[in-house]
Length: 325
Image (tube, rainbow, N blue to C red; front, side, top):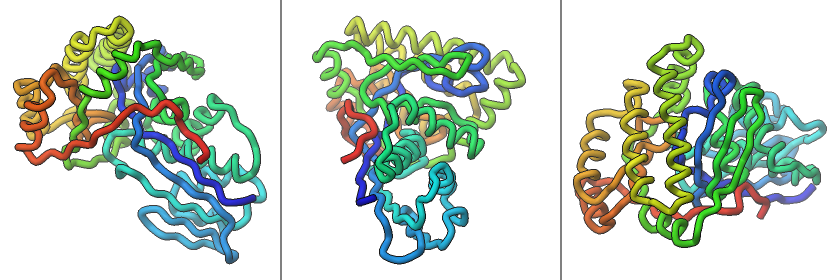
C-alpha cells in the first residue's frame, strides 16, 4: 500500500434532472443528460506515520478507530473494506460543496476509487458508480439521486437512463466537435453566492413523489421529456433550440418547490434573458449555487452578470471521469 492520488469531476445537468431519484425512476424510469466539467475534487490516500487515522478536509480529524470518524461519507466508505488499519485521507476541491455541482457524489466516487487503488484492487466504472450510489442512498439514506455519482465516474457529455429495476444505462453523446466547442464557448457559469443543502430540497420532492402528488409527478414527467428533447437538440447541433429548452426546463423546475428559487435569483435570471442569454437554470437541486446560462451575446451577458456582482467560473468539459493520477 502506497500513496494514491485521485480526482473526480464535478458536473452540470443539461436536461432531465430530478428524474434520477429512486422515488421517481422505480415507478416511471428516469432520463437525463449531464456533462462533467474540469472542476475537480482531489483526494490523497496514504498510510499515516502514527497509529491514528488522519482526515483532512474542511475539518481535521485524528481517530484511533475508523468507526469513530465524524465525516459520514468517509466513515461509510472505509467500513466497506477489511483490514485497512490507520489511513490518512486529504481532500481539496476546486469549488466548495453545497453549490449544486454534485460534489458529494464526486467525493464519494473519488474516495472509493482511491481506496480500491490503495488496496490494489480493480473496480469497473459501473460498479464504482453503483457502489457510490449505495453509500449515499442506502448506507447514509440521503434523499438524492444517481446522477452525480455516474456523471463523476463516466465523465464527458453523457445520457443516462435510470431503469425501474435500478440499473443504469450510460451512453456517451455523439456530438460533432463544433457542437462541443459551441457548448464550451457559450455555456457560462455564474456563482449566486448562495449555498444550500440539496437534501432539504430533495426530501420534499421524494416525499411528494412517493405520495403520488399529481403536480410533482406531472412536473417530473415533463422535465424528463425535456431531457429527451434536449438530447435531440444537442445531437442535431441546434444549440439555439437547446437554449430555449433550458429556459423551458427552468420554468418548470422552479415550480417544483418554493425553495427552488428566490426573488434575487429571479431578478438575475430575467436580466440574463434580456441581456444576451437564450436560456438557463440553477444547476442541481436548486435554491442557490450556480446559474448556468447559454449565451448568444457573451460580452453583454458577462457585463450584465458582473454588474450584479456575480462571479463567473470558466470551465471546459472533462472526458476522463474519476481517475487515479
